[in-house]
Image (cartoon, rainbow, N blue to C red):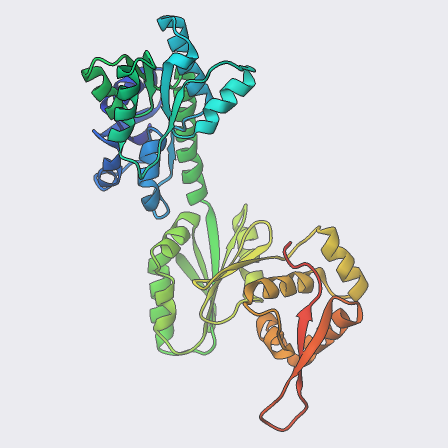
Length: 414
């Protein structure tokens, strides 16, 4: 099956891309043509089912950017770079017999032109350069080019904006469009095709989920059914409180992207634990889902990936906790304190997740899901080796001794 690529571009770029794409196999191009690149967001709403989206340049990409974070299929764009700029300048110098100082150029990033001149160690007079700003009307760029030409300061324009090129040529101002080399366009098409295949492969990757109910209620079956439908999963019952789910990475991503996860926990008042495991095989994904369940807290979702990184809680602000580490800093701390590298990693994640630097043993116990006594033993070891310190006391409203307030005394940004 060919890779179907939706392309948002100008009419001129469409004709060029069609001629180049003939050299490539197994791609099908579906074009959505704009007169001005600010039409890109509207064109995105018209795109029919396809495998991947290709934006024909930096300008349409910038207009599309607010929509791309939630775009349901992979996307990419043809970037303007030093190769396109140097090719365009060389073309003018070779064919027009002009000096660089006789050119006016508009580009997305002026630094790219400077990089080209630095690379060739050019020290002569520079061309006139306009950096394209999304908040600046394109008509101002056109007027600046035209005025330079009318005043006799330039003899030629290189523009990145197709509508500016059309306006300049209509006024008989010598101009050319910024020229992306054929090799760059072919490379972009190959990357777009590869991106589509990689995403499909990733989306089809097997995922195993573990669902735990605290007690059997009439709502359990309804909760299970909703999770199965939202994640397109099949399931098997392990016992009265545990179910195993089988789905794909793509379905899980879709459930998170469309905020379907939150609804699972609103059906019943009883706490639910839900974890997913990713892996290179069903068996590995299964092990990871079950291990994640040991760290899960009720009514949020945790994910353990192939690298033994525990991600979550979702949909709350997620953190990442590595359950296997080769970090020499963590290993040294573990050796000194006689604490496990896992506990140290979890304490680091606890610190990063908090707004306040100070905490009590109760705060840490709730995060670690262990008893206060166990947490106090951990904190005692950290204090003894200088990795934590007592900074105050919290007075209790009830009878009992005041609770110590701690601060960590080591780098947690690992």
